[in-house]
Amino acid sequence: MLKVLIIILVIIAVLFVLTFGIYYFNLDMKLVRKVYDLLGKHYDNLEKDRKL
Image (cartoon, rainbow, N blue to C red; front, side, top):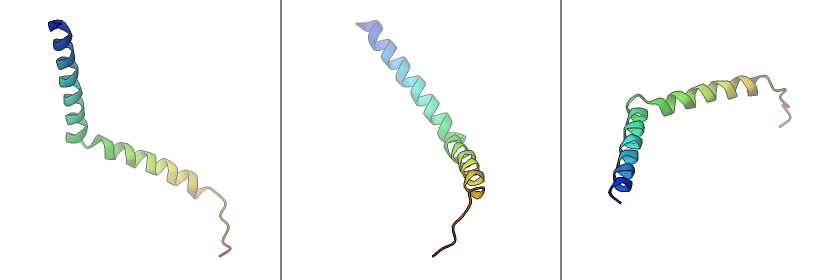
């Protein structure tokens, strides 16, 4: 039972460190920026219908 508790605590600690690293280095917004740029290239190449 003690080993299971230790494993759970280690997993929680690792997840905390990972999420803190993502927050500290602003990795979520860097990923969003890359996806935004890729989507922008895709939608800029689409043929547009100008009928309003």
